[in-house]
Length: 113
Image (cartoon, rainbow, N blue to C red; front, side, top):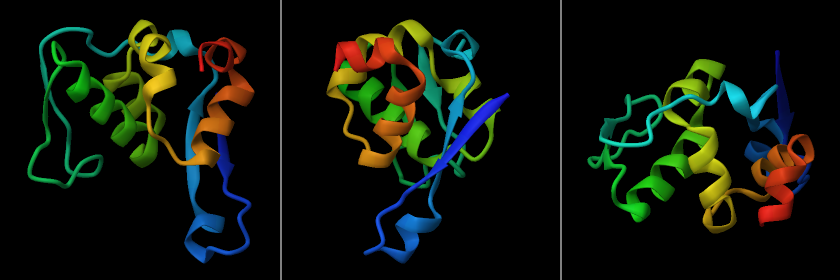
């Protein structure tokens, strides 16, 4: 089971339709913690779709893109890792509505922020 949440900012028509996926449990996030990851184009259509998980700047950018662009729960499960997410959560640059959705579901993220 998952949660979906949309923006409520009436100033932006796109934002009002934007949906962010949130897993039912952080333990579902079993993505890699080491190695090199290439995101599929539906998550990252930039020229740099390859991320070295040994580089925290790469990890943060990859997690931001996956959280913003995930269209199915498997996107979150495949590319995000619970331990890594909790560790880097405070430094992620996310849309306010995405951050609120995740923190509303997972109080431990709110405490780390």
